[in-house]
Amino acid sequence: MNIQKKLLGMFIAVAVMALFGCGGGGGGGGAAAAPPTTATLKLSTAGTAGTPIRGIEITVVLPKGVTVNATTTIDPTVMETNAGVVLLSGATVADPAAFSQLKPTAVYTPAIGTAPGKVKIGLAAQKDFNLGEFVTFNAVIAAGNVPVATDFSLEGFTAFDSNGAPITPALTPSFTADIR
Image (spheres, one colour):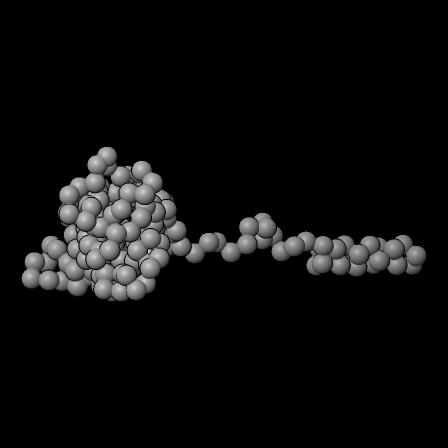
């Protein structure tokens, strides 16, 4: 009888350890990260300090699976971006009264075949602004795509002075990306 009590006690102990001793086998990884749905780029200029800028033209080249909210115009291969895709930021909003009339223009060309999608941004101010961040660009990531910052690129950059002439020596563009 004594052996039966010991065996029963050991069985209960093993059962208790089995029920409460393990963490459920989850591997400690937690829930999988949700795939990204948006990409926000902060576009900036760099160059000689004190260089006054009056306008900028630049094109953002989009990676596969990334688009922007846009409205079809007369030509279905060229679309006007919707409000919120390109927003003034940084140096272009440093003086709200001076830039209250400033509205960036942006035209979206969707990806076709192997050619990537692109958004051409134009910015013409009524007052000079300085180097640094000038716009925030918001894109949409299609399901199943996971782009990284280096998948985006910039091309066709020109900064203009108050006479509409390209600034020389040339300034350089850059961006930071927040992909969520």
